[in-house]
Length: 357
Image (cartoon, rainbow, N blue to C red):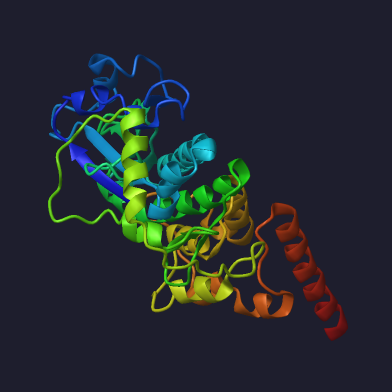
């Protein structure tokens, strides 16, 4: 889940004071890590320097909250041996999603000769903090990513409309990357149902009920050390009631074309962010961020390089590629296989053209 919270204060002690000891030993270093820039993530002055703005804006920056799906967070409590791999997969996917936002959502609007222009921006520094529990002590793997409102070398603040317009795509890409990285870095694998719910293969659904994350009261912010968290989770498991496992779908190596097409139903047109969201969600067992970007750039060249809210668009029919999918089958998720799929389609089109002459 992605949330963006505007920062109006440079008081960052909420982050620097929390050592996140509940996942101590499962990550390299402390909870703070730099996606760009450097400094001491324990020093409020270094962290606050990320929040840059102009004199005219009251928004100093943004806290982008990136939370893992519940069953993947639960692995922190159930599999201490491979929990470090879960945290690593999460962090890699956070980096991929923030990279997507920076490349496609971060724009500065400038007016020249009576015309508004969206110009690409880049954050001068990005720092993030990884936590492993919620306020009730349940396993809840999430990051707080801090960025400034004023991009590097820009005279004005970023156009927040672009940031919010791309959140759903960034969230979907994060989840697709996380499903992929989880299988790469641990023995576990995760899949996304047609209803849009993540599941972990071999994980009883009773654990989702045990640590559901839904409480009437928000709870008090507490500091947990590793032993306390592990002990609490062990006690919680005494209340575990099995509900059974769900059968994962087939088609690990191909896109769920039915889900992809359904995600675009009712749209008047399709921008790149809509394709990214639909594709990410239709990659049932996930896909690396690099392979996903390659797929979309290769299949939708007219949408490459688009940014902000005023992206170029194509029709729903063009986005679905229904005729090619019927002819060649579901689109593969591996880069080499997709390239072969596209080449076969071009060869078939050439053969038909030659026969018509």
